[in-house]
Image (cartoon, rainbow, N blue to C red; front, side, top):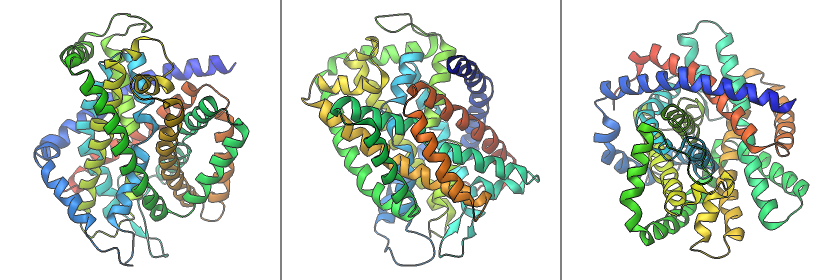
Length: 434
């Protein structure tokens, strides 16, 4: 029964991304890129300088939270297990060319995410508690007059905020590698997520501000070491990526083979998933920053996409390619672990820590957004209903195949992207170039 349901959902997911989401997202990305004169590339140095300047700003106690706290809360959702596991799933299904299409999605997604955060910022509202509420449910009513649209988006963000895929991967990795009791791991992780996420974006941002830089330093360092050891394989590896992106890839080893459309679909879909492009999540989080210039906060979102896709996802891809792990039929959740274990001992002990760090930062960030959206739907009872829904979903999908959880997240993300990207296009005249 469940297999037949998810078989239908798999076809529906493929149709959504291949025929609706990919064309719409790429078209809008090209439009904004031309309109903003490809500033995501030509002005990238100024974005780095802006980030450094923002780091030096005093924290204070003005309305809203520090821009850096909002930034780290936002990328806490982006830089997660999707960068290590979902990207491997894309390669496993679509071949090495999938990473090229992830790069394409990220490049054009930068200006979409800038626009998304910008609109969430200029249409945000004070929450009466010293902070702000923002996001697609606050700017979409300006073009979609129906009150149903903000509710639909909020419900979808509640589903998306319950990150069942990452929860499944974290618990599976700890149980599989360390042999802990599964029920105990699920209960402890649930409690940790609910406790921190209920503290709001500021608490999430401060925790992510410690977790993310630490992970970046360790993971990138280890990955770069492996790549340097195999520098002679770089030319053939990149040749494989580009040829696979435009011609597909024949079956080899444990890889079943794929065509160009499947490679493109997997790459763009997972690129939007890992970078939260067009989802609306980032505009909810970053609208809470106290920065007075919406362009400044929106430009920081571009840096988040760069770290997410061009650094972490790329490193994961190159790791499994240069070691040949992608051809061996290894489970996607174990591919990076297996690649690193060829050069570093005890990865069965360290990898669950990596996945926990990444998964936890994402889980608390998404859960926080889902909680805000639940309160938007119903100020009094929304939070309680969301707590019940999330606990049931987390527990249920902990015992179901991880591909089903990723499929649910992918379909939900596709629906959000279709609504939000349509709204951004209709509101394009309100978005200032940077």
